[in-house]
Image (tube, rainbow, N blue to C red; front, top):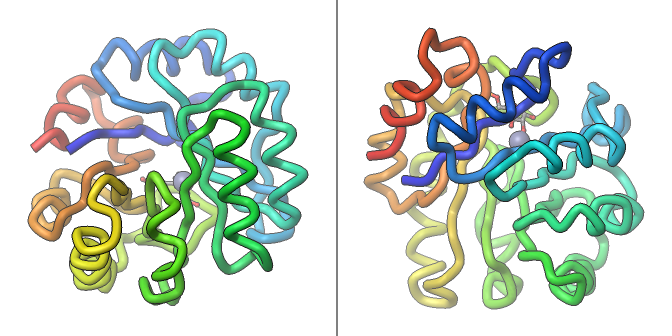
Length: 213
Ligand code: DX5
Ligand code: ZN
């Protein structure tokens, strides 16, 4: 299992310290939650702060857009050369076009599914994706409880992935801890995002290692 700690749970007064700490503690990606106050009822950070994160991160960025007007935000963040940019299928009229655009910018495209969105919604996009991100909480805030129905959903998506595009990774985001990571591993999940679990743990290295099963 790969681990992408979400900097949403970091201490923003000590962002450099916390980004360096999770990278030194062995994370695989730095998960960056971008919220616009429209698609979700919360507002986070833009390219000024994310470029400061990119400058001190020694691991690749995994940018999760929770915004209206995805194309505008892809253009804003592409110059920071993240490994992944993911956007919500619920907020995109032309997802295939946006996948092509992200790939043309040299970035791996990913799509996010909210808890209510079935895996079939991306059946005809799966062949063109590098990753699918399944939300296991409602997007907008860290520290929420894990929604169990993501487990059978990940299992279904994993079967679709094996048939259509075995290279496409499955990531799960929200309420992940050492208590549910095993379940996720068993149904074929490749990467977990963990915010409050990693940042509230007394030892970030121990927390990250407990998810790398
Ligand atoms: C929620 C974000 C998550 C969040 C995860 O909208 O996408 O990345 O920060 O935080 P935890 O792990 O605390 O649920
Ligand atoms: Zn996220």
